[in-house]
Length: 439
Image 1: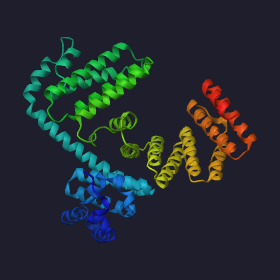
Image 2: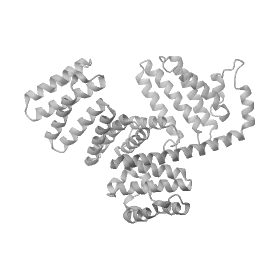
Image 3: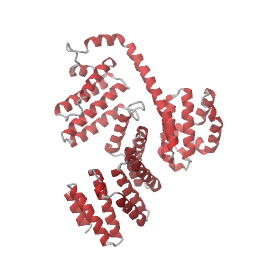
Image 4: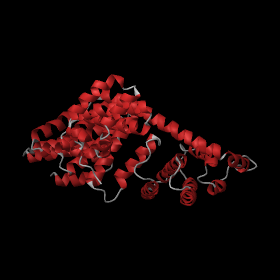
């Protein structure tokens, strides 16, 4: 059931809540004050869950960001790592939305502290379980290796999820990954796939309602090995089907999203798959996934991929006819791409920004944006196929704009440049198509 955010007490009296919190802000290290702040900001948990509807409430995002950061610090004082992480995540997301890098850095620091606390708690629970199973572990340790000291795949198949076999699994995966720079092989794919299958069967049989983090992590490690093996052999269709199968496998084990204590790269990978592969997702669902992916890349400090996920976010906002937000996404993507030196993403962001101006009826600004980029990035400075492909599409856009303006010379000039770039990249069919369309 979704919550109408506009009806929440905290949003109906945002300024009043802010005033109360700011008067207590210097005493957040005190448990009584922290408890009071936590109570005042309880509704932010619902804002966190329904953040996609926040923009439509008209609430001041900067004020909510301040309250979220205060809630995170209060939760830290109270030792509530989960509430701390959620509030810090909300503060970080709103810092991105309001373009406040200092607040983003503060929220990220608070989030990382929460994550460390959750990891420590999980480790303590795991250690307790390991201690309880010490006698079994001792017996297994004696029988976990062959006479030569090497764990066999048959042994791992027989013990896919037991905590006492975690070290044996880790050693095997370390060995497999040590050859990751070598070309993939059918043997690697078959071996990694077989181990994944054993884990899947073990989870169904023995793991109970929750899958241990160590087991989940080894599934991701094996999946990456399978992907490398398939792609190295040029088996793109098989690799795509493997991604679909893996996404279905992991989703079937989860209630909600992958734990915030899971490795960041695993969370990024799964969110990327959700965005690309989920069938029947609504624009609202894809928007939520794209925004989550942007937040994860922000957490990693990866500006290039932040920019690319913002472009995906903008695409969904366009489908929802939320044009002002769409334009803001594209502008942020462009700024990040420039900062990251990501030339191909910079070109695509400029194309999308120009398209936004075109949709708004400002063809002159759209044209000028693309012309300025064309001047700033001469073809001879483009070094990768991705950069050249993006620039070719930008020149096609310019040819279309000049065509609409009735300037046949301008149209022909940019058409010929686009066609030349496509031919240089070996895309003769695309070149021929545009040559005909823009004749």
